[in-house]
Length: 377
Image (cartoon, rainbow, N blue to C red):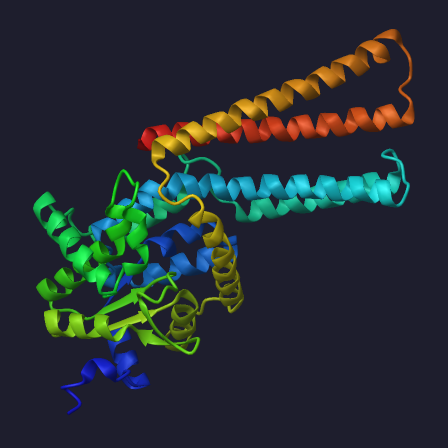
């Protein structure tokens, strides 16, 4: 009976350990992309863990393709996070001056600013490893770990067959990927909609041809991958396990990133710091918030992204010019005539200068990001 309903039975801890020790590990796209978002400590620990499996790792071509396609966007999104936080700190100190009726030249205010910006710069230097796509140490590390361990690109005939099958599967909510069905509408590349299914099919093909079990590590928390009952994640979808067993006669199991770290620490002496789990979980929560925003931007083509970014660049440029004009007017009225600036005018001048410099930094990042988009167009 057990063999007949094998897909319904969750493997025991012993069976999971046995699979862990002999299976090939496959990491999904977001696991690789999140390396840019993690702190230096977590990133270093995870890369070391991946390297420990160097002889037992493999990624489908679709994962490599998605990683390379999204890499630039994630890099500049991460850089922008620091710029945005810098702006928020400036707003905080300005609010402190206003609320507490201080002056911008107050030594305590200056000391607070120095402390905050020094702390941010230190955090940025420590954790932000990649600031430009053409100097990417994370990419270099990934290329080394997965050298010779990436699947081949599937031909157009096989790709079309997967998409045709996917259309039927999605209508019946057969995993994986049916939650991405709407992505194929108004999209220049419906691989985005069928990406999970393409990855799944490539995993099955690899396992069948090489006679190996698979451990799939994914950041994806959607129910088209996981068996979720009353809010509790039990394991992979039963349909996935059944399809894998039927097609390959091998074992299959999945781990979320925090599950992977917990199991890795149980199975290895060189452990990943437990703080990494908190960071991974925190990133998952942040991703859930971002999904609502992304839903409003689904179906946007790369060309539309470029157009929107260029429009933003023009607006930023106009804001920079307005602030330069304000500063020039103050300089002409006071400084060039040798008149000392009144306290309130000095505050306005300093604040305008800081905001102008922030905008100039953002402007440069947007220019670089647009160039990256165009390179991938």
